[in-house]
Image (tube, rainbow, N blue to C red; front, side, top):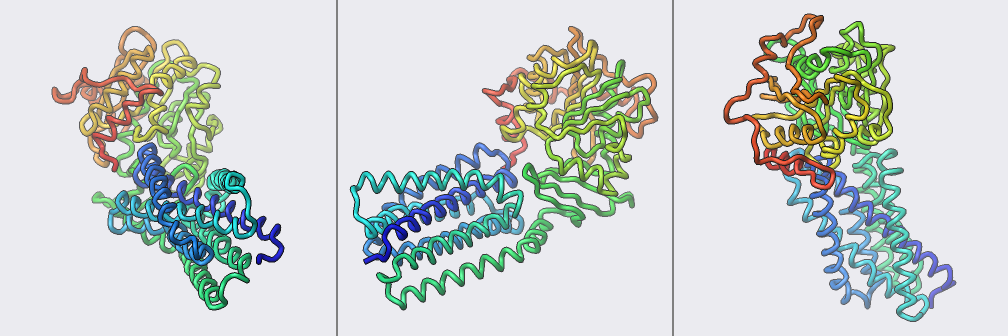
Length: 515
């Protein structure tokens, strides 16, 4: 007999709640890690969820023979789930950094975790009926109501509590510890009179060992992450931070010229090298500043380097910089070597920094801007694809002053021509006239931009008459930048990208091969 059945039933349903929350966190952690490391969050989400749901069905069937010894079997399942699920993110990150293996390992981990999650419900149902027999329909309703409520709480806790408080690696380890205690200790306490002492002692010892392993991994997580991360980069890492939006890494070394080479990487993708970033940012900035430039808008560009170039013009009265990640603008404003590189641009009184999603900000933006610089990461997933959509450029048109110029970083017309010309097509479909151009940036290779206006004629590619002395760009270089080789000229086999049909992601992934 179960002592105090009402309390026992409550505690078992609480266990269902906690285990469901833990299970969903494991799923979301795998999805988030894949988005950080591989990109293409739609594919990562589809892979993780479909594999885990299939594995849960297999786990439910596999648990049928275990129902005779449901208590011990459930404790073993939860111990294994706590260990594998808790260590899953750390293990996959190390495999990716050290061996370059991710997708195949993720499939295995997702299947095993799903298998163990699937085995929970039949065993829990058996134990629930042992406490108090009830009609099957009522027992199923109670079980799944609590299970789904736990999934809701776990889904909300992952982005709102676990990631901000513990980070991705440690967050999964904390959940593993909770999973182990809830799934082993609580269940064994409820059924202590129905479980042999030797079995209880063995299972509790195993749980203690699992908690010890997870706790040790928690305390070593920073060292493991730093060591693994360094394997991903050629040069020594001098600053690294994982934010709710991305992983920010700065490396520093001596370039072949003897100068210091400070490099910024976001989610592993190079954003600039201090040795040649001026080539990129001069090409991005100055062609847009012909004519009016009293009010300038920069979308992206949280490193402050495009802002530095804009502020070289004394008649610029106001610059609005819209950057999603506050950690990026804080780094640009506070980290000495980056402040030196951007000439402390973010502290200029003419600058207004807005930390917001550019798409959402644009929907509510007002006023008129004389020039706009768009410096977003490449459209490798749906989250960034909306920033290269026809709808985005159409909204942008609503806040432009007459004769305003817009420049969009558009990727490489050499390495990713379909992506490049799709961006141009999207801008034109939104009502702009465009002038594409491209330059060579040694760290990136050939790189392209799109100059656009709302006037009926394509904008002339030139520098402002009062442009400051530049290191790379002059009228001759800019004129040549508008000439594309025969094999990289505008093509007719690409489509404009929209919110409902983000083809630019398909083009980018096919050409850059992010996975």
